[in-house]
Image (cartoon, rainbow, N blue to C red):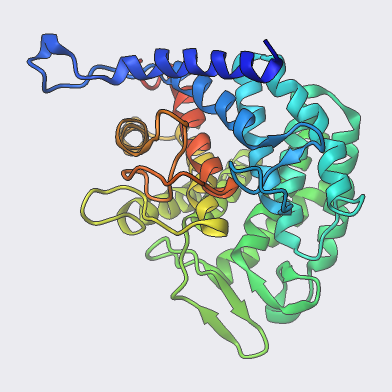
Length: 381
């Protein structure tokens, strides 16, 4: 039997083990669902994710589960994050091999460089590579992350008083998606390696975004400001911008201990839970496929870090846990194609047969997140 068939058989076993735990329990009168083993669910989810989306020959993630070879740079970072999540949880060589091979494959597909015209795209990849360094101790990942960070710094200009531009040829466009992740990256580099300049970068970037794109009354994070027109795009409020803003606030709280940062993180989280949900069922809203398909997963990643923070009050933590667990249960019990282990853009509805990498990554991120919370004793299996 070849390796692919063996892997498929293993995935099938994982799926069976994970799925059998969320069937209706006849002993409960046929109406109550028993607990889900999130570790088993994550085993089947992440192994299937690698099997269905990873191109082992060229070492990058396909655009969809139909092996579309089109290369898209920024989702590679978030797909790598899922592999790292799974590797840190299990130590499985399947994920280590993926992490190890990703470096050369993605670099080659991106023109033999990790640099890009989009500052936010570089930030996502630098963050993922820093995590890869911490997971594997491979110096090349550290070197690459720092090199990309140095290029990201060139995106800061005086338009609108500062901030990192969205794109190298558009210095007038200052976006939440290019400032939140940059702040997180700078803060994490400072925390790990102690360069005071990185701390100053983190503080300056956060200060600019809060002053220009954050509504302190509501907790909303606006998408961008066009400095040529002076117009702030307040109509575009997305889960991923909420997620990286609360993530950056949390990182600065860790650095400074100043409570206002933790308060900002909670405001951004509460806005998301109260506003960026479907009114009928309180699930995180459908933000479409392709780029939008990744938005919820990014929010989930940083929201999970907030839940795990020891300084969060018990009441707030419990409220956040219930929300995330509810979204995961709906995805796993109702929105997952259990035959192919696929997820859609709306976590309550079954997906189609072909799902793009971004959308699948969000679902896989959510399942790994609740498995982490289960491992930490915050969710009971």
